[in-house]
Length: 406
Ligand code: ADP
Ligand code: ASP
Ligand code: MG
Image (cartoon, rainbow, N blue to C red; front, side, top):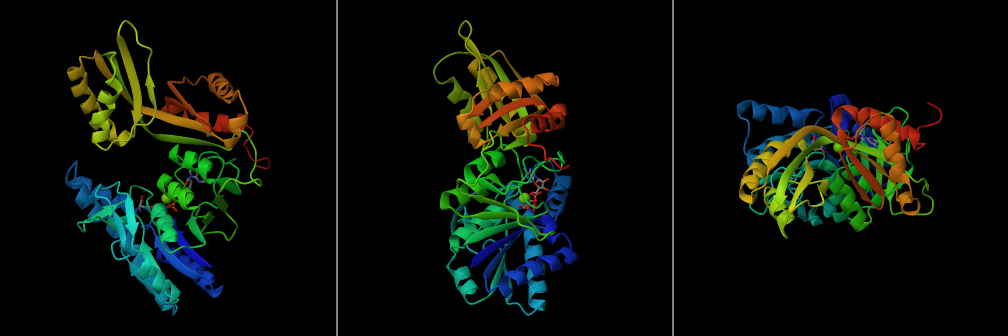
């Protein structure tokens, strides 16, 4: 088999952990498999580097931030290659650029355009172990770029596709994908197999166990992902195409995201094109808008409320204040202490009443719902951030997801 193994921050967080990671690489080689490795920075390193830059100034240039944080992955790739070589394994580290990852030029949120994978494929076929830095590439001008937080997952999946691997193993600090984040709900249950589509919703709604883009890529190319622990040798969770062996529960999981801020622009003259006017400049600034609600117009005026990531809150508020004047709207209000909680499940397609149940459960706990959005397989509500843990725990339990034995 040809395998891409990705190791997250905790799996390369110390020399001792790098040793254990090398054991996992060696074990696959001993089975006769070809192995390429993708590594994250040592845990905490990306944050450490970013905060150093912010000590110098509030808004360091994105190009320099990328050059800075990309070093984190280079350290762990080189250390793991040294560890493997020390065991007589022909392993060589490659930066994103050296490995042929070409991205667009959107610093801090670049997208992979192409991987020139032939070179690495030749090395793999020669029995070598390429150890590639996750999270980074170079743009067409040769600038170092990074793929957004958690981006090493995407590097690993893209590499797996480029070298036509049989599976992409994502090693992390949990032994699988759970019905919700096990850090806040100890009763969360491990899911054995999950469909790409469901995982995609789960990730994009805040389950940070896999970067959303990595699931999108895996789904498009049908690359099986195996999310597993680098601490315990147990089977993890397979992320694959939907099949009959999957559980058919109505709700498969609960996801949450604290990283949300809510903005309302009020009293906009209601004419064709207003939504485009409001969201055009936001999109132009590269900001992702999430939940959107537009009210029914009253006497020719309407309100639009939407959410953006907390980090983009101030910039979006500035844009909206400018627009408010230009469009002759009444006012702009913002709140950066909201959060989003969602229930997800492909089973929802064939069950009605889930939304009502969700609203009842939250109402019983006194949690006020500020915004609602649904798709075929998810229901999302925006609530006050201080209720997030209560909401996740209560929904998890009320929808029958709690593990029986804990
Ligand atoms: P890595 O550094 O290995 O990429 P991450 O911190 O990015 O690790 O992802 C693993 C973490 O994801 C877990 O420690 C867990 O707290 C969190 N997580 C959030 N939602 C889930 C979920 N549904 N199942 C498993 N882990 C989850
Ligand atoms: N080191 C980067 C981060 O902390 C990328 C990753 O770990 O996937 O976000
Ligand atoms: Mg991660």
